[in-house]
Image (cartoon, rainbow, N blue to C red; front, side, top):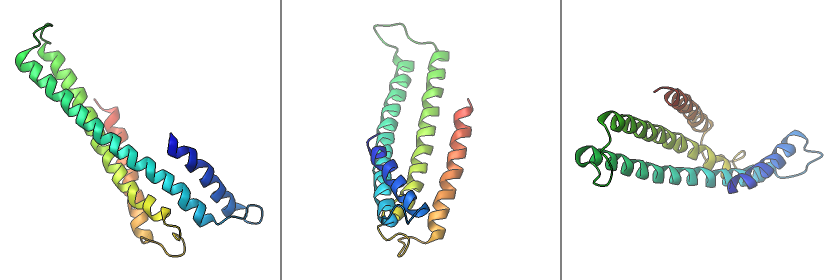
Length: 151
């Protein structure tokens, strides 16, 4: 939530400078760069939290697989069907989290490019690189949506 508190106001100021430059006199490149720095903070935090989520999911899966072998001394051992269902659900979450990491990875070059204060006059990356990353992220997003809909 934090980065978005900065991103949206800064992005709207920059947008206003692009649309009505006589009314809103700002350095649009600078405000776009500031807003994208907030976006970069969000992407990097999202990436970090996804890695923590993956670690936790792997632990849960390991505990589940050990319960298959040993059972829990205090409670009744889950049935094989229950274990398989839970394992399937955890594996699906792991897959979706890995796909999310790929999306974040393709966001980073775009956001770094636009975070550079002279991104329009002296670009950090070529337009083909930025647009290629955007297209790849969009394709991955579509794939992620399809995977989340399937069992």
